[in-house]
Image 1 (spheres, one colour):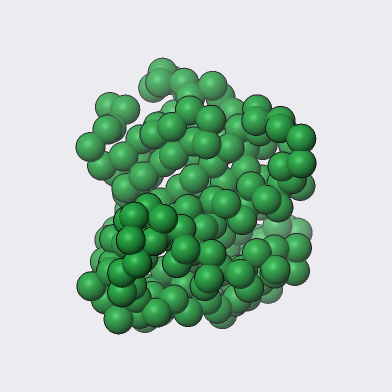
Image 2: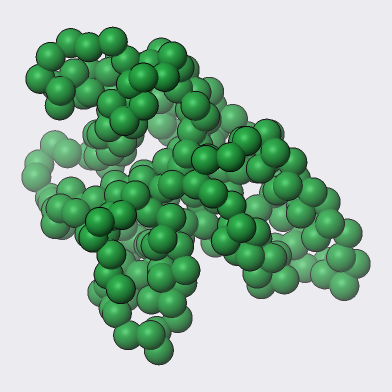
Length: 234
């Protein structure tokens, strides 16, 4: 089983801090090829030559917060044609207990998600998790194989054989499928910042509705379960 994980909002106090994961329910290599092909096709659009965000896209791949609409539109359409599930944990930063740093929260949310995914897929021999290269969380990532397993055993209440967890830090250009969780986290972040509005006239709510069918779990450290496969908002 192959997972893709990423975080958003780190270093930006105006945004919720989110850790997300996706698991593909189709051949991950085939999905990667489809995304790479879309990148090649969109990169050939000469009409966008010279647009800074487009030139960044050409060099670095899809990035939710900066892709021009000529890029984000086709990528969102491709996402709708994929089969995957998303898992997200977030904090709105209202927990201000002394000594709890942003890095501590990120570490906890990574452990929380991966621990649950180890339990979910405990019949599999291995979980390979790709996480985007980021020097600021390198120590968190290095500790995940131990901490996520410990978290899973704590939740189970006993030691149990779990999949071997392999963590790979990867550049987005080498695993463009990571852009899927990047886009999902952006839509969730914008919807959270809107006050979790449920008015269809809101663009942020419509964008959230677009990706909510793919969400298995959206969990807040402060407010508990927000959305899941059994608890939809619409």
